[in-house]
Length: 450
Image 1 (tube, helix red, strand yellow):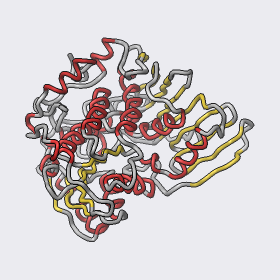
Image 2 (tube, helix red, strand yellow; image 1 turned 90 degrees about the vertical axis):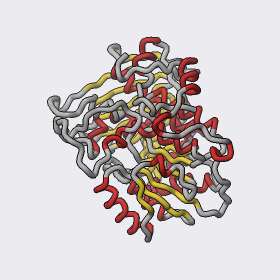
Image 3 (spheres, helix red, strand yellow; image 1 turned 30 degrees about the horizontal axis):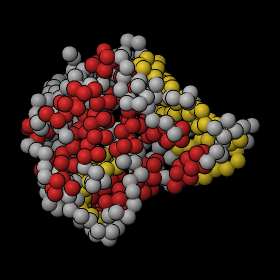
Image 4 (cartoon, helix red, strand yellow; image 1 turned 135 degrees about the horizontal axis):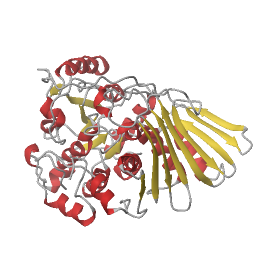
């Protein structure tokens, strides 16, 4: 069994989740009182910890500063240099400096934390959500909420168990008034019966240096950064964004950015699990560099009822095939809708635009993102904790959309590049594919458990 394989399939997966101990994290299944956390009133202060101060962690701080009656009590970062920068940003945005802690496992045990915001590497997302919930914390987890398909199912089980807690996945377009409006119109028949969606993302990501094994810098806690992932030697490109393009830690562009667009398209089509996924792609640029996975990908999903969803991802070619850097195009029998973070445009069957609406300012393809849409999504999370709203993207929504991205990755690794899916359970029909691509192995003591 290689490092990408996993024995967590079907009934054995559920059995494993129930039997495995967390070990090194020192977290055990907690009493129901602690698991559910303190009751927060409709107008009460919500105390938040921001975990991770690179990229998305900074927009989290800035958005929390715009939400009423929120206190950021802690920030967390394993990179000492980035911690200093993050604290400076926090003070500027919030007007005060939160307490700084390196290890989030300490933060989730703090009594002065009601919720955690997880802006950490992909391989940490499921584990961080788990230990947050098991310590009674509400959890906002950035997309993709998982590193693999098995973790998606685990997180949905986790949400069911800790049903009194609020969970939100960072697919912030779910909180866009413009997107909500146009999806409602689509579901109401504005473009007839919808039958197809094309999602896309293009960027001009540059050459990645060929990594070299070096000694980790003194200010960077490499052991802690690796967390649930089996241990490897430190690479000289690991301090920043480049881990995204290594299968051991990253999830490729389909999950990194595609999750957003796939989520909107799935929402518009009104579908959940597909019957099949077929992929065609590979590493087409800078073939001698340190980028390990595909950088170009076309994927097609078929769903029950004949609906089709396509993903066109070009990480290193910035040509705007569809007239924008990212977005979703929804096709219906009577018209078409183009929707992205900037708003939407609706067209009749003849191609004439019938309506449009411009949205909040939100970063498109810039690293880190941030903007009005992120703030709305985080405000919805906070108000859901207070009981004033319901989360726009609970795990039951976000994990299914992340599943689509993880199907792409599984199919891309498969020799056939085509996988059949049980649309009722979401599991792969091919037993060998389930064994090889459903999940991963974990560093001993860092396993997931309900």
